[in-house]
Length: 313
Ligand SMILES: [Fe+2]
Image (cartoon, rainbow, N blue to C red; front, top):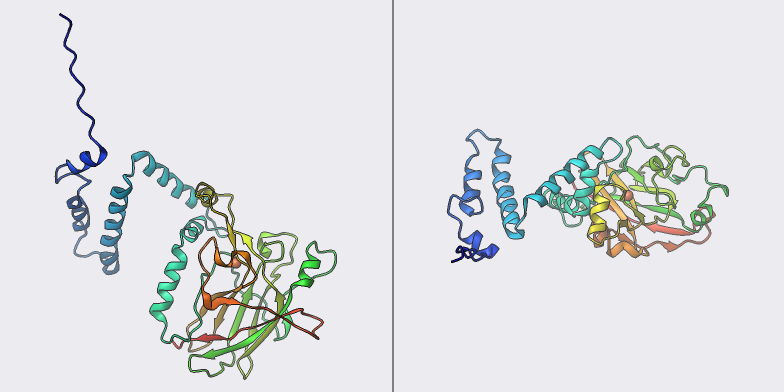
C-alpha cells in the first residue's frame, strides 16, 4: 500500500480569512480602538482630537484595499524619498500633497473657517515659487524685465502683453488704501525666474501699493500653463496613474492690508486648456478670469480687471 498523502486544506478566500480572525486580530475594528485608547490623558489637545480619526481612516483604508506588507514598504520608501529630495528650493512632500488634492482641500477648509462674508475673494494655494521682498514698484509699471528681441520667447511675450488692474476692497465695498498687492507668474517658457538661469533676478515679480481709491495697476503677460516638477517621486506617481503634470496658466497674488486678513490666491486665464484639468486641483470658478483686447496702449494688447475683496481680521 502506498503512503497516504494528506489532502491539502481547502484554500480560504481572503474575505473568509479576514472574517474568521479572532477579536485580538489586528484586522478587527477592536484593534483600531485599542490603538486609539493608547493615547494618554496628557496628550496635546488638538492631537487628541485628530489622531483617533486619522488612525480610524488609516486602518479602514488598509483593511478596505487589503494592503500588503510589500505595498506598505513601497509607500514608506516613497515618503522617505520625497523627504530626502526636499530642500529650501523644492518641497517634494508638499508636491505629493498637491497632486493628491490635499493642499487645495486644506486651503479651502481654512479659508471657509476664517471667512466672515461670502463676498471675500476665495483663496488658492501659495505654491512653491513665492519669493519674499519682490521689488516695490509704482503703479502702472511693468514686472517684465529686460525684454528685447534676443529673448527666445519675445514674440509670445508681445502677443500676450497685458495690463492688469483693479481695486482692493473691504467686504462692505469700501476701497482699501495702502494695501500691498504682491504678484508673480512664470515666463512664457513655463519657468519661474529662480528655475531659469537665463532670466533676470525677480523677473515677473513685483509689489504694488493701492492708491486712495484702492486701485492697483501693473503690466505683465497672460500666463501660460506649465508642468509641475515631475522628475521626482511625485512625477513617477503621476505617470503610474496615467496623469499629466500641467497647471493652467495663472498669476499668483498675495494681497495684504493692516486690519484685514491676508489673501493668498491665483487668477486663472479662461483661455487655458488646463483650466478644467489642473494637476493640483486649485482652480475655483470665482478665480477664472477673462482677458479682453486692449486698444491704444503701446504696452499691452490685453486688459484684465479684477477686484480683490479682503475680510477683516
Ligand atoms: Fe504657479
